[in-house]
Amino acid sequence: MQRARRGHALYLLDEPTAGLHPADIALLLRQLHRLVDVGNTVVLVEHDLDAIATADWVIDLGPGGGDAGGRVVATGPPAKVARARRSATAPYLAPRLVRA
Image (cartoon, rainbow, N blue to C red; front, side, top):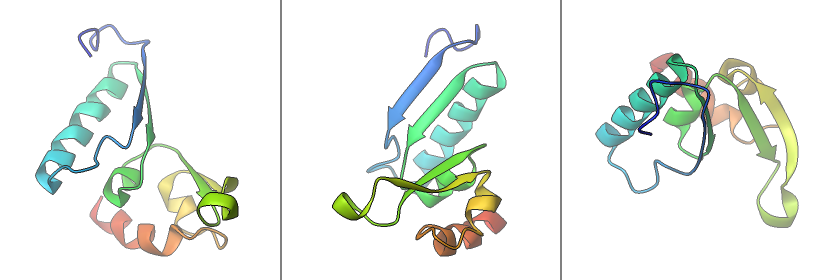
């Protein structure tokens, strides 16, 4: 992340919020948004609803886990995914959007 000011970098993070305190998650999300603001691309594989709520774009896979998953059930901004009928994430994401 040393080159964050230059932009044009891709950051791919797998569950970066796992094990973090909510205050640390908020700090991490601010930093990730700063990376985007200067022209970088940040892609997260994430289950934390607060992180998902602040995303620009969500790709929701499901409808379940393991053999029952792996299909795209919803894509778009978080507000659109929160309305997706086939999404198991939607009913839990919608209340988070009010706080995001």
